[in-house]
Amino acid sequence: MATTQKSLIESVPKGLLIAGTWREGSDGQTIAVEDPSSGATLAHVADATVADGKAALDAAVAAQGDWAKTPPRDRGEILRSAFEKITERAEDFATLMTLEMGKTLAESRGEVTYGAEFFRWFSEEAVRISGRWSTAPNGATRLLTMKKPVGPTLMITPWNFPLAMGTRKIGPAIAAGCTMVVKPASQTPLTMLALAELLRECGLPDGVLNVVTTSRTGDVMEPLIRDPRLRKLTFTGSTNIGRRLVEQSAEQLLRVSMELGGNAPFLVFEDADLDRAVDGAMLAKMRNIGEACTAANRFYVHESVVEEFSAKLAKRMSALTLGKGTKKGVDVGPLIDGKARDGVAELVEHARSQGATVVTGGKAAPGRGYFYEPTVITGVRKDARMMREEIFGPVAPIASFSTEQEAIDLANGTEYGLASYVFTNDLGRVIRVSEALEYGMIGINQGIISNPAAPFGGVKASGFGREGGFEGIEEYLETTYVGIAP
Image (cartoon, rainbow, N blue to C red; front, side, top):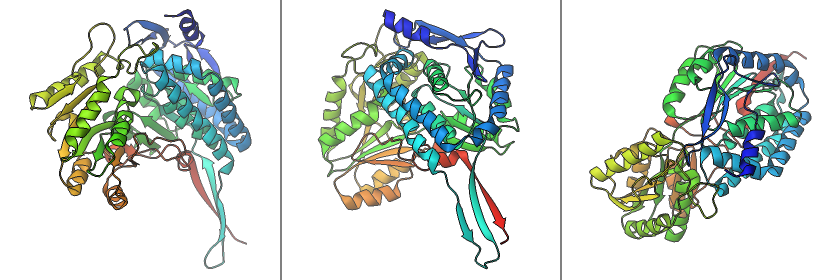
């Protein structure tokens, strides 16, 4: 590891941030943060106990009253300052993410730009929170509607986008006037810890943002979810865990936002520009090494162009270079851990056992680290496991269809409904298919659709609530109606 990388890691706080103070866990335990490209330990961070979690919520509750009264412009200026500081330190944040998560520096730089933009977007939304004034139809009452912050919020973020999954929750919460307890993923806590320190530098008051790292997530989080002082829960992660959290949240009838799993279909119709479709496929599949809930998971290509599309995609995938994300010339980094790599391998072997053909890739790379080759596999049966489960890796399974309705039925034939992609040059088809797809987000002739100015979220088993866009701040606001007799 280069000296600059060592010093960067050393500069990151390793404790729990509670009431504005960095401190060790109450029992002194720590969590090892691993470099997925080698399996080596990068650092150790505090491992919070149940008592630590409660202390973090105590701090958020104590800070809520004053924070809610803070002028919207002041809250927005903190976010704007944080946006500027993240931008100034983009290379440090990118390097930190690459070291603890594995993605290439190019990918990490893109995430820094994307993640920082949530702070800029919501700095502008803070001063636009508004209600309305009207007269009742019978004229007897004046109707005042106002918006108030929901209150103390628990945020549980995933490992695959260590910065952006935090900023798109923290940004609207700060803008709305909510205090927070954030629990980042134990695999990638360093980026969140660095972000929390940056927000302190920007003047965020003590107790508004509290960060709890823990390997005992269920034990530490459940008491907070069941605590009557908590007002909101927001979670990004797997559907199975999301279901359990929703059950726990029912006791307090919490406001809940869930951004859960995906099984994104990628539809290529016979009239599509195939080169553009392949470009889109590379983005939709290989962004973040395929470890994204929005990643294209199933490729359905019209039977008249499926062979040509498959060949073009395989050529592009086979040209990608595997390696440590900080090295020049590397296109694809490691998966997050051995379990993830083995899970991808199992899905490929299952499809192969059913008669599918591996065109390129198809195996784990030898040596240290959790690498899996970029893979294209054709002739995949529609009931193959990889067509029903999230692959979360660099594997593109391809199947064919013959009619527009068949493509729609195949796309909708899943419990998930987060992202989907459609490639066609027929405007009528764009309208028909977009209206028929059961997804929260649809990309037309493009492979990346996430945007801070747009509402991110899904339907069905992919969750509920929206992050980003004008809709994002509403998740952190309650509506109060006041009837006034004139």
